[in-house]
Length: 163
Image (tube, rainbow, N blue to C red; front, side, top):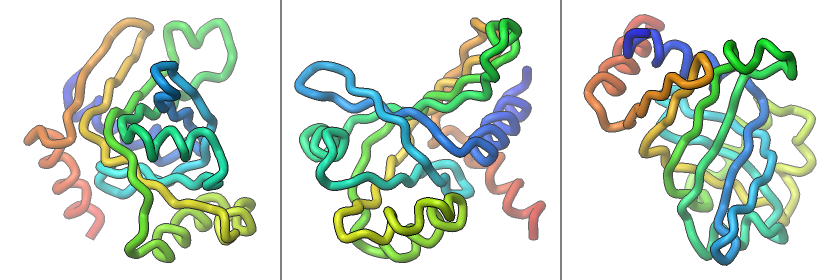
């Protein structure tokens, strides 16, 4: 698979899936949580919401290193060879500036979460993605850095094609 094909699949998977799993650090122990998310069009940021009372929020405030996994498995035996998995690695931070804008994007993708996202206790967070690990056909693994020229060029072309 060429780099461009991998990037197309990466973009499609991120745009079409609704949920992913974040992993935070809970005093040296991995802590995984299912979250609804939205990704910016350049895939450099993943946005999600959580209550400020959760362990995941406390973990992120203590250690911003985070990973985020999404996949297209269907719980079939064929998934072992056909599923695609993407793990994003980066740092998470609470969004303070432009919070309303990002809330609107999350609500647009997840209208069923409107009450939660608009609640006083809800924090909107952003993962600043540094790298994606793209796994296909069970064991074909590719690292895709968001600052690589091929990544930047692909998204420049994609934006220009859509105009």
